[in-house]
Length: 315
Image (tube, rainbow, N blue to C red; front, side, top):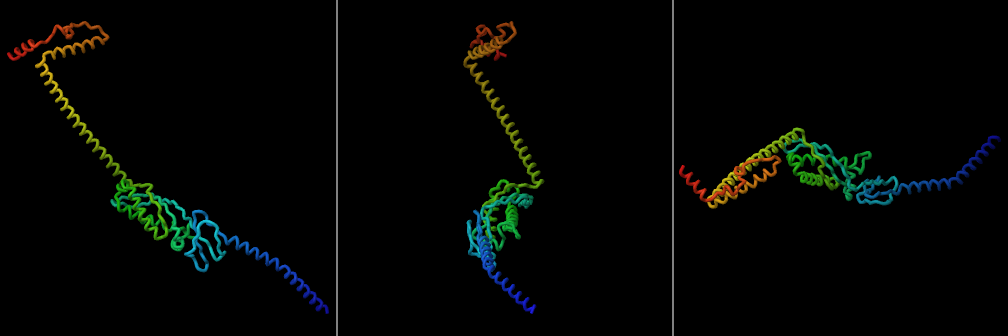
């Protein structure tokens, strides 16, 4: 009888517990449903920032080639879908110390600046073949592709020029490097916008050879200047001699045709002597005849010249 009573009591307690659980199940299910909706709502929306573009990965079908969205808010199915966001703005990257050989077997170190961006219309292909936009568990696409492309193109282009041509034709070399890099990167879904050589460094032996060449050129130019100077001085002496000869001929002609020319020269000499004596700080007592200051006492005439000519012809 006592066991029967305990069994009845246990059954009643179990029924009471079951009834309470049934009464509480409604609110719990509601809360669970609200929690699930909140989780799904917060994870069903993703944002694409400006200058970016997103493609979609599906756990069932993989990358969707027909899905690509620009900046803004977008919806997805949580857990089944995952957005892959690429930055499609232009990036800059510098490759320093790229050593390669020139056509004349000189070693040159090149610093190259590259402006690039992913092809926004080929992002699914870029993700499959090269990688994501930034480093995650796998390297980014630019870390996978650009180093090998730059190294290969640089070696191919630089090897076609002599060392001195890299300096004189720098812009042309940059254009050729850019053209070949555009062709190589296009096959990977990367757009090359600009390529520029920022620095060139040659080997020490080449720099010494250039310095010696410049010194030799300067010496040659200096020697040419000395030769030209000597030639000019020689020509100047010839001109001066011809001028003196011509002056002597004119003076002789003037004396023969007009004896008064000597009187004029005597007057000019007297003027110069008078100016010199007058400007001197010392007192001078000299004979005026010896200084040609008495211009009237020594007048040269045609008769005196004729007598001199006859006396000179006699001797």
